[in-house]
Image (cartoon, rainbow, N blue to C red; front, side, top):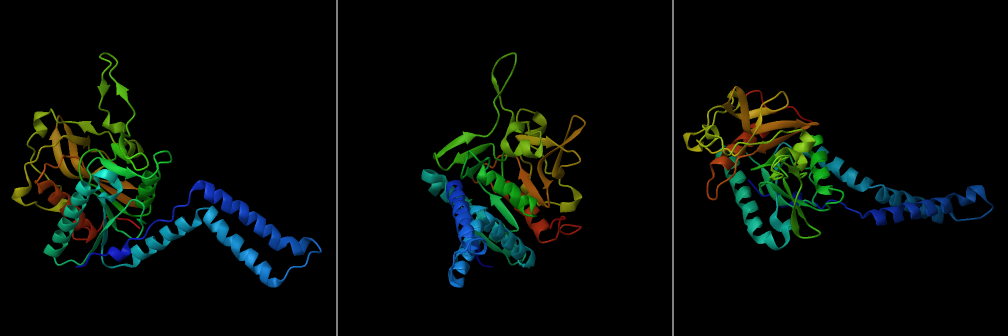
Length: 329
């Protein structure tokens, strides 16, 4: 077992203004290289080659192709590797709160190491920033409950990057609470809500519409607040057969958020209520990959829910669940 810190590479991000300038310069150099063909101007073969190569490189930078190519390379590395690679998002992206969130990241990293070591499975696990390349990793774990770090809130760059990573076959793990209900704006160093404000027409009070959070809207998830329902206060962990029997110390657990099981939701833990099956822990397909979403709160010092989440991830990523790994490319 080793921590694969060498796997972390910073994503190539070029500001839009710089990319536009590169494309303009590429056009000028390409025109200069082609001028001997259309005019009587003479130019040495050396300069023609320099201008041609430079224009191609500038086009790669200006069209954002370098970032795309680095992602494709990472995707190929992931497919070729026989040892799982798991990235844990780092607290370093959270400014003044970096130290406390950094401790959370390190705790999850150690728990992942312990889970794989328990079963003598080799794994590469490392901390990574949202600015790093995601493609080489089989799974990315967000240990910060309902908040994630957003590089650019205007373009939602990090959010789009996560979607693209999962679409190409990755696994994104939401460890607790409504995924991406909050975004930490890295430019402004403050937390902002990603939900659309919804008000009750009678009382004019703000309604907690969790289904309108950023990821829930993208996945069309109807996340319901079940905190006040007695049936969800102390809930036995009824795990579907695919994941076997869980140790007694896991449950019962309190559930505060849940979704109704439908054809798109692949539940791990089922809670029957009023002729419906609810799930607070489930897989959701997206493109060629999967979101593993856990909605209950993690109480301080309580490792039961993290154990449940990591056991689910471990069984799938190693192919130990009946039927092997869930399909993805």
